[in-house]
Image 1 (cartoon, protein in one colour):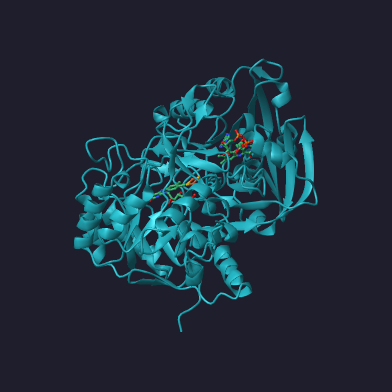
Image 2 (cartoon, protein in one colour):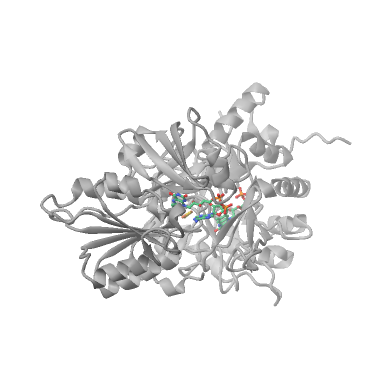
Length: 273
Length: 313
Ligand SMILES: Cc1cc2nc3c(=O)[nH]c(=O)nc-3n(C[C@H](O)[C@H](O)[C@H](O)COP(=O)(O)OP(=O)(O)OC[C@H]3O[C@@H](n4cnc5c(N)ncnc54)[C@H](O)[C@@H]3O)c2cc1C
Ligand SMILES: Cc1cc2nc3c(=O)[nH]c(=O)nc-3n(C[C@H](O)[C@H](O)[C@H](O)COP(=O)(O)O)c2cc1C
Ligand code: FES
């Protein structure tokens, strides 16, 4: 019954920087690596001291055998401390947490899945693409399409990783320094309207306004959409009730019933900011 | 032979003096696999009200220096659904269950809630949460915006009314947001409470300076975690001088050392709260830590440690 959650101290086996603000850690952790589903996350203790107190939620970025990766943007004190960790050291983590994306088509695999990433929302979607590739309808000639949205070219992440998986990647930047000029949801709208994309399933992760817009578009084009939400989390495993989101069936915990929800189940307008 | 670690809370005997705080352990099922729940001395449930409560708007929590603010707003399924759905799960742990209750509209709800729990054997004790800072219209007494736990007379009235409604051991949970906590503790003792639990959260506030808005939607919220520990230890020490019933100490306990502070200050048992979020094994690690401390200091029973502070003067 229920999915297993572990508290582990995996060894950091690798670290890579992307520019100054992003880094990727690989962790040797058989339990979590084997159980993890795309869209799930881990809660990381960034310091052994009492301050900063809380763990930090980070998506499972990619899984290879007994190891998994996290991809992190340095945005504050916790992620700054985490960026100081070095290979050979150990990290205190709890996971895998949350529900994850539903990526299996009931019958035959999904023929044409489309992934929409905004900003750091790209992090857990690489793992999703890995799994979609394994389970996609093998007869389908349609690729997995990935739309990556970022502020500028410098913030476009994971393009190579998606391409290595055989995905068809399209970029949107706010300033037009790479790909389509505009928001990633505008790019999606254009591709749907022009019938360049005809997805049976859309998967999104990114800032809330982007996901809200995604929900509107997917409703209009009648494509089922799953979105992964963020919330401030004090525990990450359902104990504090601090991460609630309003849905058509009442408040639900983003960390437990989510972070992935059907886009149409979220009551978006209720959300302040 | 009584074990080294067992203590009594009224008629409730617990195998060891380490519990988990209301609102910080879910309904225990969330911790399955993360800690050995069976080892806990007792589990205190999230506070339950008569009717279901959806809780407060988001954001409900934020991190603060060595602590956190929360304004969950007593989200819970209501007593009937709780009894039907959560008690059976809690019962399976084999650990005494202490059900925390509160009124959110009318203070007569306290005895009504207690009566509903009377018949349930797994309920080892009832905790009266008269100190939640996060419910707008709850617990308001004396016509002003005060908590029950900020008024000795109101505390006394509530404890007395619940005392009449149940034979289960009663624990009264006190607020640190008072001028003199000993007054309230004495009122609870006098009215028939079997123990007092302290402290609930300190009322606090944190501001996003860019937006110039409170970081918590409701504005005010309850501060917990290591940041409040010295205040909590002080209050346990003050209360210990004034009452005879057991004190359950809490507030920022993270590990064995911080738990021991509370025993030495006068607690008979302690409760682990916010620490569960960061280290789900904190409470069970503290149990072994206390055993080790007693052994290496040649202390026969945890009871000898309670209030054993040596004063400097
Ligand atoms: C389910 C989930 C998955 C995530 N996956 C990733 C990922 O793969 N890569 C990545 O770089 N980031 C991810 N994030 C965001 C990441 O958790 C925050 O950037 C991080 O907590 C910031 O911590 P800080 O101390 O550096 O920032 P500060 O702003 O100093 O943090 C202060 C407090 O706010 C919280 N907080 C701040 N920003 C966020 C946020 N966006 N979401 C939730 N809590 C926040 C922190 O946890 C901390 O408690 C994810 C968030 C969630 C909820
Ligand atoms: C997220 C959260 C929810 C809480 N909910 C309740 C509650 O429902 N009832 C209650 O009596 N106390 C509640 N508390 C207070 C704790 O039980 C405890 O008294 C307080 O947090 C101090 O202990 P700590 O510093 O170890 O957390 C809550 C605390 C937190 C952090
Ligand atoms: S973060 Fe604690 S319940 Fe979701």
